[in-house]
Length: 204
Image 1 (tube, rainbow, N blue to C red):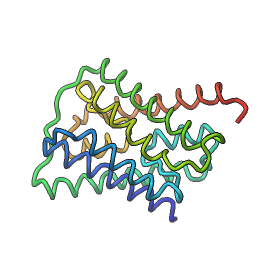
Image 2 (image 1 turned 60 degrees about the vertical axis):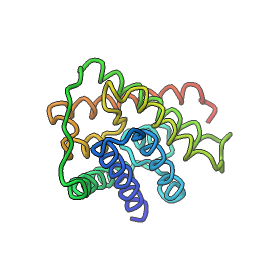
Image 3 (image 1 turned 90 degrees about the vertical axis):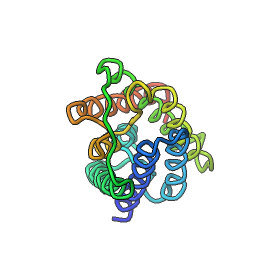
Image 4 (image 1 turned 120 degrees about the vertical axis):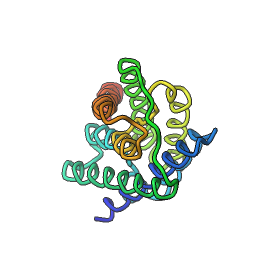
């Protein structure tokens, strides 16, 4: 149960940061989002692994570093945390966001690539023998999200995370008709990253 609470809390504060910085029109929203993810990983990574993202959970599970029994509870905890954060943001901001239009093809590829990069970094810095017990993986993962958000945010909104996408839809930042895009592209990016990792790191 401790692991699931940590996953809920970490996702909550990630989505809380996403909502408040984007709706509040912060010029440094990607940096704040990446930092929030990094500090939540530092805070909870030793308990749950610090996934805070169903696509990461999928990738880590395929890599063999997440028990099958934890997959569904992790994802459920992450989604609950995201929805709770959405309600908190709407209360704090007094309003929700305004969903913009995205070009589906480009947005799909952007979300796939951004999530691939995120899961690829997670697997290489947080699950390999060579980097065992390192103290930098939270920052590396957070800064990956920052970099991809700056690079791809204008195209897709830069969720790279199905739970974030659900929270963003609840806040009015993503159109409900476009939610499928994030629910398909992000897990697919995680799956591809995990399969590539396993082919390269076959000795592990």
